Amino acid sequence: QLFRILLGELSDTQPKILHNDLHAKHSDDNGENHLEGQMNFNADTSKNKDENTEVTELLYQKVKILCFFIIGSQNLEKMGKHVKAIWVQSCTKVLFMSSKENKDSPTVELKTKEGRDQLYWKTIKAFHYLHHHYLEDADYFMKVDNNIYAVVDNLRWLFSKYDPKEPICFGRGFKPYVKQGYMSGGAGYVLSKEALKRFVDAFKTDKCTYSSSMEDLALGRCMEIMNVEAGDSRDTIGKETFHPFVPECHLVKGLPTTFWYWNYNYYPPVRYQPALSENILKEISQVNKNEDPKVKLGNP
Amino acid sequence: MLSESNSFLKGVMLGSIFCALITMLGHVRIGHGNRMHHHEHHHLQAPNKEDILKISENERMELSKSFRVYCIILVKPKDVSLWAAVKETWTKHCDKAEFFSSENVKVFESINMETDDMWLMMRKAYKYAFDKYRDQYNWFFLARPTTFAIIENLKYFLLKKDPSQPFYLGHTIKSGDLEYVGVEGGIVLSVESMKRLNSLLNIPEKCPEQGGMIWKIPEDKQLAVCLKYAGVFAENAEDADGKDIFNAKSVGLFIKEAMTNHPNQVVEGCCSDMAVTFNGLTPNQMHVMMYGVYRLRAFGHVFNDALVFLPPNGSDND
Image (tube, rainbow over the protein chains, first blue to last red):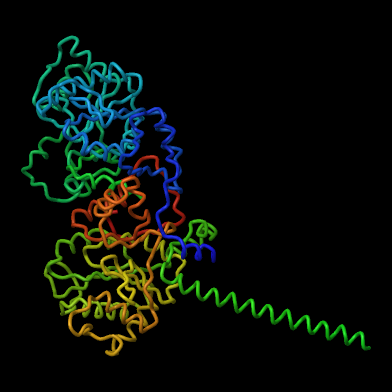
């Protein structure tokens, strides 16, 4: 005790250097996840000494989720590195895709034109790429954006009761235009392995359109055409787990009743309080990369 | 006869030498201890988990119930949106929380301080709290409505600290010779400190109502000066890694600074995992914090806390 105080007197109280990242052994085969010289958030909660990681380890082995981003080439440098360093480390595999190749970070080149109107075409090419190269590497394929934060362990919990050989997709259901609903692009969506296969098949047989100005709607239509079920991602109490806006918007009263959002939700939303599921899967944070670690730090 | 007395004398001599030695060593150790203790007084650390686990389960339960924290929040009418957020969120986890306002506000209940001078408000609030609640609460936490506090972490930090000792804790700032607890990070006083403070409030030489002569001295400094006269000194509260647990900044700001200053260790270099306060939050951010700290769970992550502090009955939103 005395020595500790003595030493404390002498040494500077600098924060300790990180110890081993428990998930390092999983990411060993993921060249993409290992970032050197990049911003290191290393916010992996496995460094919490008190934690019992049995369940998470088990689920990690059981449910393989591949996360991929389609990023506009101008945004790649700016946002990519922050997201890379935070929650994506929990994905079994991570891929970044862009219209053009990027020298600074490993990106899949989609060879398309740039622009938001190209998004659906990029999405089609992206899924084709995944089907060609990574079909056996994962059970579920999740498309996300730069400004989405996902709690991957909760995703695993959700999928653990489904079979990836079933044609099913998940996300925040929106009801207009598509009978079974379509998944909001803003909240991120997931396709099972079978769903991915069917999506790619759709283009071989010309069953789905190639172009659309609304990527999420077009994909949702295609899912319905190919008999892929729109899954219910709500928690056991019926609260939504995929969120298209920042947490503040979902937690605090403020969105006007005339806002389009209320009419789009496939399932009746629990308004205002407390509107967010305890097992949140994803939420969008608007360009504020500072938000992400805040949520992570919020977990005791 | 002679040999007997010889050995007797020898015995006495040896005995007295030993006695002198031991006394000397004893003095040295105590003296050393005092110096160390004096240093230790400025940085106060959180308890060790191992130490807690040594205590029996029943005793731990008793221990967790023995902490009664009374929260004083000093507000002004312009703070009304923050006031609303604070009222709906973290203050529900205080054993009792009361709002002390510069003037009466129709929307919310408060105790009217009838002044908008922060130092006067603070004095009055402390006097009110002590007079009314000295026997019911053993720790007194004062904050502004821009602060978000996690009372359970506060209780954990206070675990092995005796409230009948004069504790004055928070995020300390040094100004010349004076070390004081910044009000933005929240101020913690033990009941003993409250007692000593209250005994001096009526003595204008020690604890004047009008601090500075040329310009106003901020209320947190005035408090420190007053407490110093009562032999109560500010201590910086830290976790086992030496990180501050009371913070005058928001998480967002910490992260931003960490990204600039040490990009290789952003989270590690940021904030304590057992932080008690953050400051500078907007009302919406307080709701997000509440959600993040108490409700959002990543499935499968099990944390074996040594102690559980349950919030008071009726505190929903957690």
